[in-house]
Length: 254
Image 1: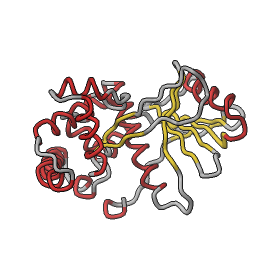
Image 2 (image 1 turned 90 degrees about the vertical axis):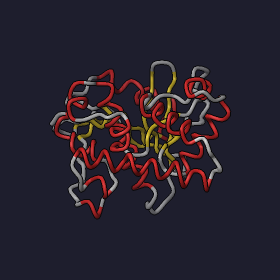
Image 3 (image 1 turned 180 degrees about the horizontal axis):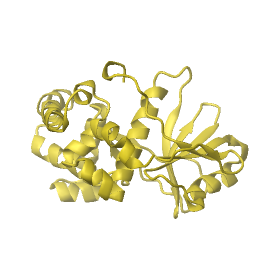
Image 4 (image 1 turned 30 degrees about the vertical axis):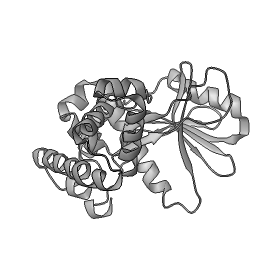
């Protein structure tokens, strides 16, 4: 129970080569992996030659984990224009280094945020790019939350990719109310997930899910706050808090 219990699986991520290694060797693996992708694959597939700007942009996305995509700001801080930054992010997404979680396109209110959300494709990669270890997971609430959400999102998207029916993955925010992950079936049914890297859940953590339930009615099949606690418990109609249970499979099967 508690986020410390998840530290190893969060920091190691899902790459089999990284899972098998210790912290120092894992960091070297991610450094060489990103360098190979950017210096070779990116130049060949996207015809991008400015590898230094791409690497800076990737580190900025890591540092602003889970933030909304403000391409003009990212471009300015990278030394390029906003359209180029957006193009580079698209290239990094195609090479599975960055995930762009787009906003849920339903006209629920005028305050609905329509910007996509950026995060790294793997929690181990995120930690390596920031040089973060177990101490930061323990002491930095914001970082631990982002790492936990990255882990959950990457696992859900991976499993959704082999599901028997197609599912779309979105995020939703309206004012102060948000839902980290929305899964939508072709029928229009949705499941909402909030991710909390803590061992306790407060009623306020359900604010976004309650708002979603009120707006979409029976389309919401279920909503859950996924957390680092010990028990799975209901929290009203179609809502509940669920403990995160990382799989125990070995590295070859992850």
